[in-house]
Length: 145
Image (tube, rainbow, N blue to C red):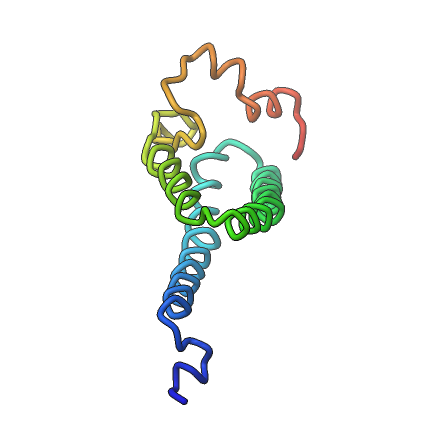
């Protein structure tokens, strides 16, 4: 029995998964835990009291993780049962390729920054921003999230 077999990595697909998991863990540790909170506090939440900014960041992160925890097993089961793993990978890769690189300028108290479009495809107008700015509505109503 080889060393890789003893580690449970005897097949190439298992080694590929282990490398993916290792790289994803490094991303989570570096970007999500170290870099993004600083960006959020200095740029996106500039002008908010620190406690409010930290609370909103914590709630947004918790909500995102909760959504992934609910949706991921369902999508995984669908992909396994229907044998559409590659098709789902292509669909989500396409969504990510369109959504993530797209940015639009947004004014913050700290300056103007390019904000990822997230799920917004197309150009938003100022009137749309006035109608849909949840952060601004929360600030105006002095609601702590």
